[in-house]
Image (cartoon, rainbow, N blue to C red):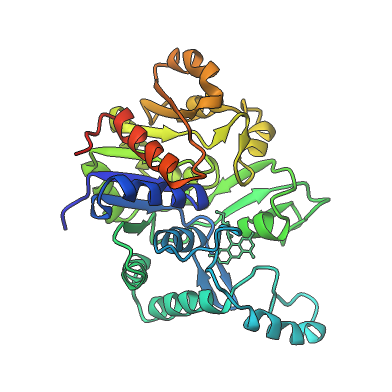
Length: 332
Ligand code: FO1
């Protein structure tokens, strides 16, 4: 299969919105998205891939915009019905939990994915089938076929986790705790996993690689942690552009800025530039962070300044064009 010229490293909401904008300025058939699976979880025996779901539903224009995840016009009968069993659930059982919301229509995606994997299909194959069913023409590649669950370490007094040491699963932190507790460190199981051949081929043949405005630690971090990927990326450093997910010292959504502060890193676009300087020669930052341009340029990065708030489609499309231009990719 021939590779596509534009490759985007993706987490969830920010990446999904950027991909949507990208398809307004280039054909979707020009784009491959390599998507984080470190957030994946199993609920009710079903394989859930939140970032793949968010990207798929956003590109299919079926995402619930307000929540940023799940489907529009969703109903919740299955979750409501599960509540019947709550009073009878023995201590220590996870059965029938409803803290992770799975809408009725969304459940169909997880049922299909799980059944296909049980039949022996790879996640790459099932992802392609799901994307085609939603008429998504961007190529969506899960970063790896291996389980690569991200865990976070928190204060054991807040949540001791199964081993009593404060290590909890990513979705426990993100959804159950509403990502409101301080994270001491992140453990990426992806460092023991290998990227798929499709991912390696896409990266080595890409004309431009975009690091989407996603969380650098828990969304892009797992992709970078896969064996050999950071070296592949640093070899492609000249054609790689990162979009800062931090605007005016804050993340639009999610805990990226809080994590930067907890980890003792500057929580601004300069901190992002330092974090990505090994793999990206170019960076796109928001107008509000223009004053950081000279400091970032001093690191050896080329800086593009534009409106990165993808609030309206025209602004988002301009961000997509500016990003490609920053890496020297010529638009027709
Ligand atoms: N995020 C939430 O904040 N609450 C949920 O109940 C929730 C359920 C959910 C179900 C399927 C899915 O694909 C994603 C879901 N998400 C939910 C989003 C997701 O867990 C996070 O946004 C990502 O993991 C972070 O990128």
